[in-house]
Length: 207
Ligand code: SAH
Image (tube, rainbow, N blue to C red):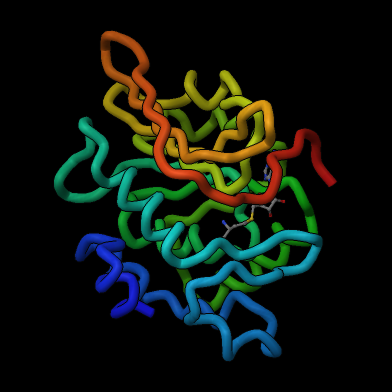
């Protein structure tokens, strides 16, 4: 998997190293374990999916490349959409603290179980509606959404540190999603729209 990502120009050395340290098969059903190292999203129950490795690499890479990012790794990061916890585990290896929020209790609990044996003391799993961000951990050097809505909730921008970067899928009027990057500087926010992507929908409330 890592060779394929590197060959495709995906992922800098720190990202590939972090991904190499987290066994993806540990996060999917044993019946799918043989597909865990292919570049595909896979079902994780509750109608949700684990993101494609190349997409995980791309998003984390973008966070690390923020204009305000420190060279010795990221500070606090917020992930919206814990799912099975895979991306949170990878983030834990490039960021000082990871706050990851999930709106489905069943998945929040599954992620907790998946992460337990990894003993990542810097990952904080939260059950709640990520549309509101997670104010207690703010400000964040990075915010990463694993689910896409029609717009970026204002709470996310408010909780972004100066020098921080937000990476999120956002859908246009026809429902097509693109990756959006928002950088916050002392002067305000700048945004860029990157390649098209396919994420599960961002939903409000908890379930
Ligand atoms: N990060 C995961 C991907 C999970 S899929 C990985 O490592 O592969 C996206 C997740 O976002 C789903 O579990 C979905 O339930 C969750 N989600 C959608 N809307 C949300 C919201 N408002 N708050 C928190 N989680 C949300």
